[in-house]
Image (cartoon, rainbow, N blue to C red; front, side, top):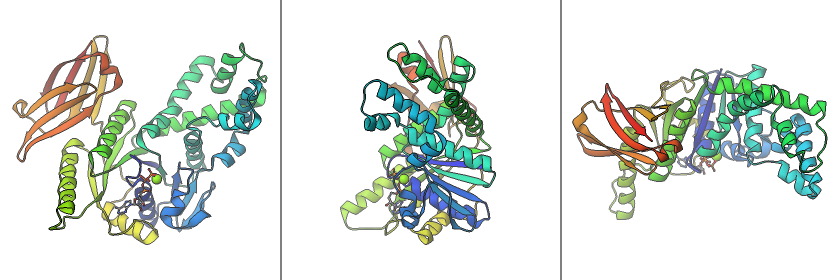
Length: 393
Ligand SMILES: Nc1ncnc2c1ncn2[C@@H]1O[C@H](COP(=O)(O)OP(=O)(O)OP(=O)(O)O)[C@@H](O)[C@H]1O
Ligand SMILES: [Mg+2]
């Protein structure tokens, strides 16, 4: 079983990449489920199937199913007990009925329900590959880490039940809320168990691959780099970078167009060294909006050619962090071997590495985890294509 997750900055092409991957996989006879965490009807729009895709897996073609998480239906069928409990808490605080249901729908609830949907699909054993179209990067990662966090925290805190009943216990002294029923406890224990099972899969590099989609601009690339750093920090395997919507190398007398083409191609070159040693796939900007099954299938050929999209394209960590009492060590793989070739500088929450290459200097900017904010850069040493940067308090 494989779980392949697409994330990246808004509008970069997560949904189309996820759809293309799913279409190609099903043509290779892998039983594929395409799931979107987006409550808007994006899968239906991309596949041009209108409102036919709902909460339960809908058959698209042979071996391909798609589902769009419907938070209301999902909440109702699985977690009504918990949902009503939250709502009754807000009601006990004197908050209006209608609003209390709105509030009970905590931020990120859709993503959480989406994870539970994935767990359900995994458990059914009906699919070889599940493709998840996640929202923009930062959010997505936090939610992927959530099962692990909740699993360990709540188990540690109270042995079994923790999430909701913990919430109940915290607020009990301040206002009278509804009693914790055994039904509620059971639903909660069930929820925690599911999240724990899912957590095991998310952190297994043989099962889960996170793929980052960016465009040929510095904003979405920076976003992808930060996600890569965080994913490595969390321990979620990133196996592929997709740079989408690259303008073709057309010769144009129009300086506006020529400028954009030159700028984008410089960004692509930069990305290849910045994301080293991760494989980077390039996808052109088509002359029309990328949508519809036929066009998405053609896009899959450009993305994967004769490769199986379910393979693990890369399995190691690009960044490795180790912290001890005196500071933190960051190890990262670099495409150079001589000390004379690079210069490392720390600028607030990032490290810049200036590397001499055949085509001049290339600058790689690496976002740093928040823990290094109070630390100083101590040293940077090269050993066997690995750069070891140490920070101290
Ligand atoms: N290579 C391409 N060529 C032409 N149009 C493209 C290409 N890739 C994506 N598009 C178009 O760009 C728009 C955004 O794509 P998509 O919805 O896949 O992005 P997204 O990252 O999922 O966005 P969101 O953050 O809103 O979920 C769509 O209209 C899509 O058809
Ligand atoms: Mg999308």
